[in-house]
Amino acid sequence: MAVFEYKAIIKSTGKTTRGVIDAENISQARRKLREQDLYPTEVSQDTSGAEGINSGVKNRFTSRGRVSGRDIALMTRQLAVLLRAGMPVLEALNALIDQTSRMRLRAVIYEVRDKVNSGNTLGDSLAGHPRVFSDLYVNMVRAGEVSGTLEQVLVRLADILERQAKLRAQIISALAYPMFMALFAVAIIVFLVIVIVPRITKMFERQETELPALTKGLIGVSEWTGTYWWLILLVVFGLFSLWRLWVARPEGRKRWDKMKLSFPLYGNLHLKLVCARFSRTMGTMLQSGLMVLPALEIVNEILGNTFIQSCMDDVKVGVRRGRDLAQPLKETGLFPPMLIHMIELGQRSGEIENMLIQIADTFDEDVRLTIDALVALIEPAIIICMGLFVGLLVLAILLPIFQMSTNIGGS
Image (tube, rainbow, N blue to C red; front, side, top):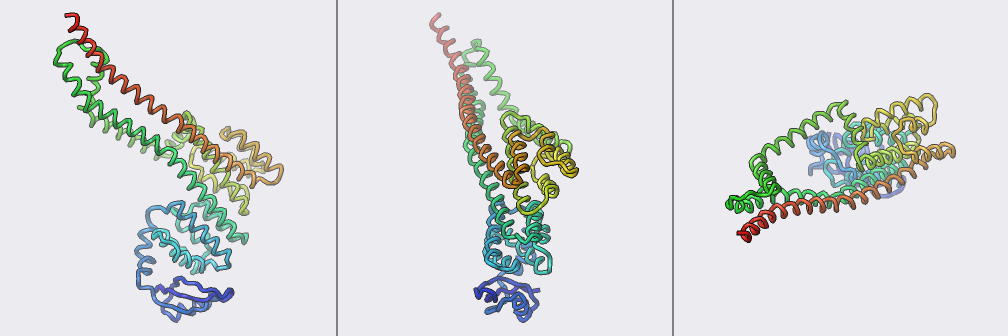
């Protein structure tokens, strides 16, 4: 089946649109367009590579890799705008293909468009690409199709994806400078120990005098590091590989995720991120028309912590038995009291969806402030550690010099 580019007039609005369509020949392409209430003005076979995208290139891009959250958010908002303008889903997908510059995402939209054109729903078509569209995304689209509010659901999805991308960018931006400082400090320390210290200590060894213990220790560390640097790298690589193998196992991953919650400073930050993700996703899905229990099933898969996910199984059991959401969450002992109290307030007022969104906004801001506070602590801590090492290094060098000066003066 060939791919044809077309320009056509929309029957309902009289506006001009363009896109691509699959057909055996030009006549069939024109007939398909008329069936979609489009009056074709130009139809030509796409020989510039569209068919290649629709086959080999498409399969190569969609079979591996991921599309960035920003790209999906932009595509989702564009699709919502097109649907609000009155475009049918198939025509909107055709327009997205022209608007999307990312080849990987464009190939995915081609496949989704083909499935929709074959009679599948948009949600079912998106479900064929789990590495690009999450369970949350697919199920919210399905809920929007059933309730007739697909445009509003897509706008909410775009908001979620944009917030997640923005928060991720803020975290990376905040941690980039202290991480660079830490790597730079480690590089300087390694350079001093392996290169500079041996050259300085050679002159002490020629004096054949008893060196201070601090200087002896520094020389020993320098010689051992210079000789066995490969062993250090091998041990680090081995420990990292063992850790990866451990967390790859379900039980190991669960224990590691539980340990993360108890880490100083980071554990509290990680819990806040989970609470923000839970609240925003749950609130958005309830706003889109899903019931609490199906929403919990989907939310549980995106929390990013297997230990909390296992605890959420008890929450789902409680809700399935008819209990309110707040009480089972409280019984897990994981979630902050503020989250529990606000959910209880939302349940009493009948506005739990809006309350969950407010909770998510609160935790997002709290995460930002916590990261700023951590960065403010990390930077001076790195400077202090580096200063202490340099101070010990200078002291180890100066002590023998003072000792030699004293011996010369005494003689």
